[in-house]
Amino acid sequence: MRRLFPGFAVAGLLAVLASAVVQKSDAAELYGLTPGTVELQSAGPLSFGPSGVLFVGDAKAAKVYAINTEDKKSDSPVAYSIDDLSAKASAAFGGKKVSIVDLAVNPETGNAFLSLTAGGRAGIAKVTPDGAVAPLNLDKIANAAVSLPNPPEDKEVQGRRGKTNLRDSSITDVAYTAGRVLVAGLAAGDSPSAVREFDFPFNESATGFRVEIYHAAHGRSEDNRPIEAFVPFNIGGEPSLLAGYTCTPLVKIPIGKFKSESKVQGTTVAELGNRNKPLDIIVYKQHGKDFLLMANTARGVMKINTDNLDREEGLTEPVRGGGVAGQTYETIDSLAGVVQLDKLDETRALVVIQKDDGPMSLKSVDLP
Image (cartoon, rainbow, N blue to C red; front, side, top):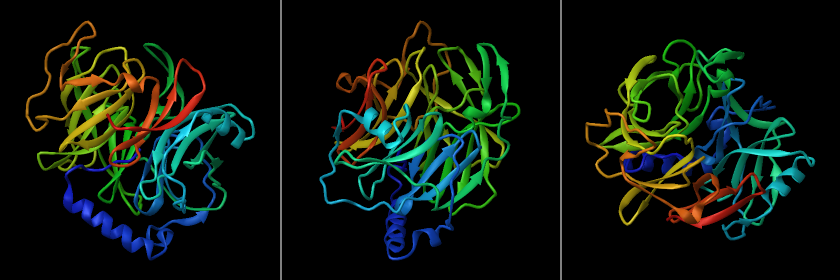
């Protein structure tokens, strides 16, 4: 998923200039990437950084990898219509059953990358607009990795709804912006909901904070559930996150003023209905206004307005019975079945569609 700070003009200009410099140099050398084997224990969230560097979250290993894809732009038009993505991905991985975890578009080439499991093993696939699907060879590829500080222990524990392994949620989403990699997920200890920040090129030090929110559908404050999907967003001149949680609060979280392991109180700007989980989220501009587009498990794809997000007050009272409150949205019926999405360009998105556990397809669609 592509991640940017909309409206953050200076950072955006610097990123463009840096990218131009890197294109004349060796990206791997500039970003401290060295050839080696990437042995993914799990394939999770994806996000592109500068010069085709792909960030991959590996929750099981509690690591984030930066991989030099060396991706090149093809001569074919950047438009996708792949009805048999499931079959093509399976064939590319030796006929094994494939489950797609995340989608990211390289903004410099228009090529798509998928994190997936194939026969129980983690991998990355590259998809081009002409319909070709191929595994990304991770045996000898320039890469760097950074480990999460204080991840949950890798073991099953008995919870209220059965056994769960908190390590599997140590990384739920990843973003690159303004020279930093942001990682949402769970940490060990009290108040496990966390966001970590790493400078890129990577070093072993990291800052981060724990997050507490008011969950209107539950009528209480919570700090134990992870952010499921987020996008960096500049609100009133302040770098922030807009984050979606299960069941389904939308929260703004400032990220510029907090030291490592401090606790941040997010502001709940919307309740989007219970019994639902966000799957993916992007931000885009249309007619001079910013909108969020969020795919969900049970409530379709929502186009959410961003008006008045700089207000101080948020939701502080319960919203019962599956009701909604706060930021308004519309459900985009034409995008039924979307399970993953990313921006393809300023007017189009790329979406993975899967209806009723059927075959997956990959389509480019106009942003609504």
